[in-house]
Amino acid sequence: MHDLKRDPPIAIARGEGVWLIDHDGKRYLDAISSWWVNLFGHGHPTIKAAIAAQLDQLEHVMLAGFTHRPAIELAEALVAVAPAGLSRVFYTDNGASAVEVALKMSFHYWRNLGQPAKQRFVALTGSYHGETLGALSVTDVGLYRDTYDALLVKPLLAPAPDAHGAPGNEDAAATAIEALLAARGHEIAAVIVEPLIQCAGGMRIYGPAYLQRLRAACDRHRVHLIADEIATGFGRTGTLFACEQAAISPDFMCLSKGLTGGFLPLAAVLTTDAVFAAFYAEYQSQRAFLHSHSYTGNPLACAAALATLKIFAREPVLERNRELGHWLDQAFAPLADHPHVANLRRLGTIIAFDLVAERDGAVPYPWEERRGLDLHRTALAHGVLLRPIGNVVYAMPPYVLDRAQAQAIGAAALAGVNAATAVPAGRRVDRAQALDPAALEL
Image 1 (spheres, one colour):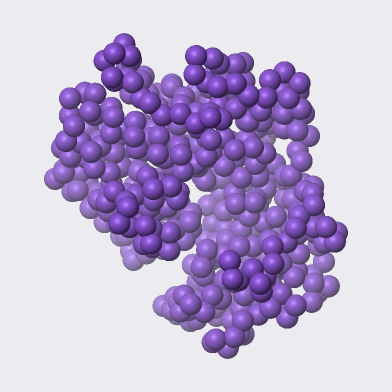
Image 2 (cartoon, rainbow, N blue to C red; image 1 turned 180 degrees about the vertical axis):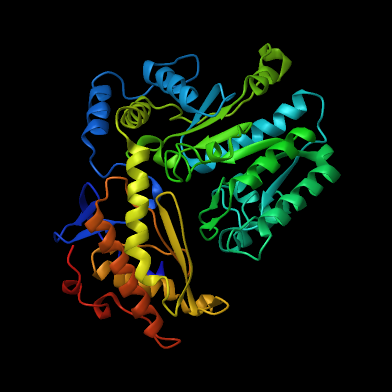
């Protein structure tokens, strides 16, 4: 909070497409989709109209003894596009809560089946699944977890695959988790993964073969597979869901963020008929899954999500995203040989690189120097919102970005790298000291 004295929050007055506009009229290109939620730009007319129409009908009713048309239609629509076998939908209202639901439901499933020993969870090193206590329990990012460690359930950690690691890293990671499940599957309820890319853990990308081996190992040892598609779902990785690229179906799939196109909070956990059957009993049996939120399945949010799915159905979104990916490659190409850039990488519409002290060996800057913050300030001065994760710089823009705007993001990133790496250790770049925004035409 003390840092806000130096960098006061920017008060945004309105959003238009890829742009955020503050009360002074300054425009910022939203290159991170407002924390990865905004798929089709701010103020998209289709989603706005759906919310407005629903507002005239019903704003909210509890999903306890009641239901409503948007919740029913959205569940049907999600099942229709989800990987095979995911036929049941449980609503909640944010991504961390969706993870909590999946963890609790997996644990409770095994309890209902008379296997209470299966109560451990496996997470990957560097994983991030949210910041509630349950979600933090399967998160392995010290910045978020360490303070609360005494309060958290301890997961079993397996090495994460990483295409930018040593040769054979992904194969070794798959072998390690296979061995873990073989040795301890009798006590493991579920493995939770972010398919194809660990986002908040540093935009670490890996291939679909790891997921295929993990799915097979989970099947062999009767362990649930939870796919956290909160960030990767709805086209971010090149397919509607990242799991599709491995041709697998998880036992639980967590969705949020882009589910409503960035308009309203909503989350859903998709699971199987087999999981549903484990809870299908008279109330007196005490087998029921008791988990609820006041705004579960909110009609306005469900209407927004339905409108978002209709855009995917009516428009060639995934085809356009492939073109957007090529534009991002071109825009960031000048960074490929920069002496302070390593591991330039892209998956779908996500592009990232590491800001490093030395390119050879990818020697990192000391974390406390916060070079990524310097880059953020410079990019803002150029009218582009980039918010690095430490010294990992990424762009994850709305799907309505055009080629010139993609070039503007790449140019702002380059200016930010140059400014951040020119700063001597121990000194910071103020917003006012950042490069002249007139140097970059947006």
